[in-house]
Image (cartoon, rainbow, N blue to C red; front, side, top):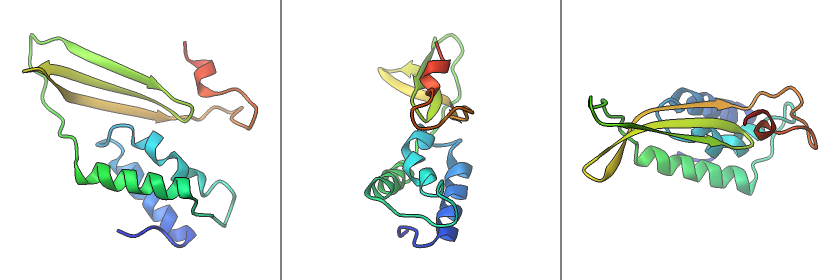
Length: 126
């Protein structure tokens, strides 16, 4: 897969990322530079950050995480990450010294005051 060259290709990539985000841990945080390329209207600039995010996503897709069915009686661990661009959570179980993912969820930041110098998502989460 090559880097997007047009606005339409970036939009298609974002659609694919959105579809696959349910299966990839921290994909929203990883893809944030790609989402940001379209914030300026009809044009876009593919930056070094965008390319690095694109390469990280390709690496994630090359080694997908397989979700496991929870085993009754084994404690569930929940990890929560609050970043500037999203909130993510992962539920895992430890089996044989290895943490196995059970479930992932993420929400992209949609704070109305999200402007330069304005409040950040972490200001709204305690």
